[in-house]
Image (cartoon, rainbow, N blue to C red):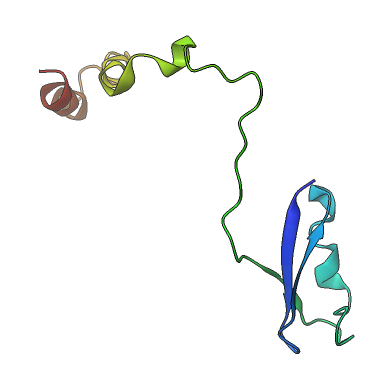
Length: 96
């Protein structure tokens, strides 16, 4: 369950709530819990969302190998891109 930040336009109070993703907009429809005014609550974005790696993450998996040159090689060898001027530029810049 993510933690959401809310604020009130009337009293300028800030607070956080743990809510289900489906319920993240419910506090915006209710009155402010501090000043009790209606239609003044909004979702406040005071910090960047956190990211968490799952326990199955492994750095040695094939999709994490090869690097940028491998990605450019695969991208420029795709049939629909192979003969375009953009593909030639990418090959000249990164693969030569």
